[in-house]
Image (tube, rainbow, N blue to C red):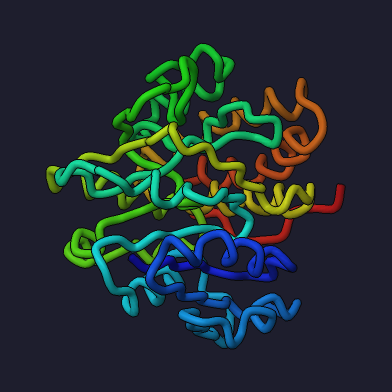
Length: 293
């Protein structure tokens, strides 16, 4: 088994993560996307750790594919530097996985242990995003794009799983040509799950492992930027009139959140409105930094 970590300015997180993971994997590959904070330097020289340095930020999908191309073993375990693992989590996650399962991931939780929709979800459709726009998440069940209550207590099939901590059978990953590099950040995991299921495999959420994943390190500006990257990637999956319809639906959802929300959620909603208008015009939104708060 090989762990692949895409690193971009992760601060001091890499070292402690590798300390936890090292006893449960055969090798670790760090693909650094031109970090400027020295985060990749701190782990140089560690046993069984290989560092690949990119001259610029290639995005998650491309960098993850770089790491996977060097991986060996039955499983490639993709993980984010801001994933908080405990000893034994990797072994539990990838132990006794049925042979028809292509990918498995834990249930994501917040810092207080509450389950998070970001764990994974269902095939993205216009109807599911309309549910997201107008209906509170706690009432979504299987009708929204993300996992929603009731939260799973046993292994549960989903259409896709988050790449924050995602085990994929290496042969399946190679057979399906890895992640689609059109996606700079986000939605590459949704796309892979769709293709894996079309090929006859199952995608499994394993709630015996609960993962606290810091979204953009908890920094409000980075969280808004991450939200914008997510919209930009989602737009690639919708073409023609469906992209225009998606823009209208997202405009309704973010419009409500911009008016009635608070904190980072409101900031993201306000920053997202220009993206929604670009989609309504049938255009892909231009990647840009979020406006100052």
